[in-house]
Amino acid sequence: MSNSIGRGYGYSRAYGKLAHELAKKGYDVIYFGMQDNCPPWRDENGILRLGVRYAPYGGDILGYYLRSYKPDVFISGVDLWMDDIEYIPQIVHKRRIPWIAGVTVNSEPLSHMLFRTIRHATVLVSPSRFGVEVMAREGLNSLHIPHGLDLDVFKPKHEPVFDLFKLAKPKHVALSVQRNKGFQKGIPILFDAWQKLVMEHTEYASDAVLLMLTDPQEPEGFETLLELRKRLGLEDQIQFLWARPDENGELIPTFEGDARGMPHNANIGFSEEVMSCLYNIAGVHVLSSMCESFNLPTAEALACGTPCIAPNHSALPELITGGEPTPRGLLVDIAAKFILPTISELNMASTEHMAESIHTMFSDKRLHKRCSKRGVGFTKRFGWNKIVPQWEKLINDVYEGFYFNSNYNEGILGV
Image 1 (cartoon, rainbow, N blue to C red):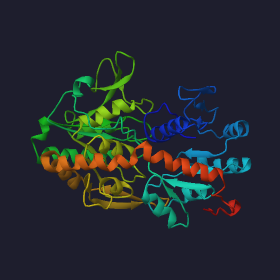
Image 2 (tube, rainbow, N blue to C red):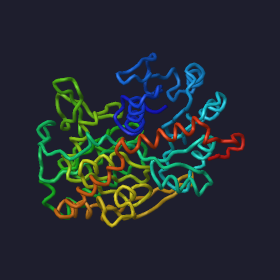
Image 3 (cartoon, rainbow, N blue to C red):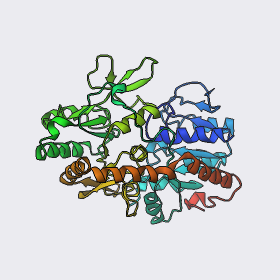
Image 4 (tube, rainbow, N blue to C red):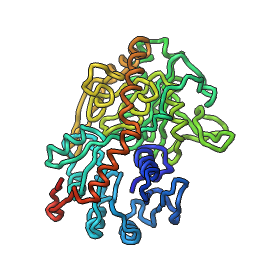
């Protein structure tokens, strides 16, 4: 159970691809896609695809699916802190089905809203070591299995890709792939940093661009990003990628304002092949978010040989430096922290240090080359040939009863 495979980001990419890889291994996979509104059908990979009924998060139909299809193991890849998801433990427990819960812990301490749900799972799986450590401090055991990458797709490309998308080609290109949802992505922080970069290094005013793959008017996020860009005087330096169909009908990125295109939004997903080309366009991928549980775009960019810049908090150091003397990019200092009503922390990156880091990556060719090479080597550990066997072992162990939650009523996780 996760976001629809048809969506091109986040859970859809991580769990949709996992489902396909498991199906190729011979598992009978049933995929409940929360944005799918369709009768059951089998896709080209043999996966039985199920859709929602009336409740967008499946609360009115998951029990029916579990009763009808009787899966041996239930895997969830959803935001388990949401009130709309609280129904899962009761339904899964009622059907006596082992539950593997993919948990995205993006801040510390662990939110009580997340704790109250995940404590009922049979096994908890975190894509980052950060998540494992945060849950452990609350007495919850978990396993670390990173999100997987198709390294046959996400890799450095040497052929020109700018002409494919008909984008202007400045000397320096930065890319930021992040959904404009809520305020935790901190996109205004990135805009402010870009303004500082342009003001302190005037050459970037004409030969650098920040490409944003996000919806600037998403109702669940900052709906005023277009106005903010204008207010900062960055209408020529920051461009929002649009989407248009190519000659085969596949959506590809295009320039903002393309008469044949449409603004990007959360329901538009580019293929992995297209995303790989986008990462290869960029000289650097920049993230400004204030909390992260893994961040798939950063991993994808690194696999494509694109150095990354990200704030020094939560799970991001694992991808950028990983405690190793060979970083794959630059970490940005934290300027301030504030506490949410959930008692979890959000971290605001220093806009001055972010601007300085972007300039360093643009101007230091030797550093850029080293980070590019190290990023490609580092992400080999995320290849599906490494990730799928970890999931196979976990699924088989759960099926054989090696994991069990013997104290469901008290909410004690038994591992």
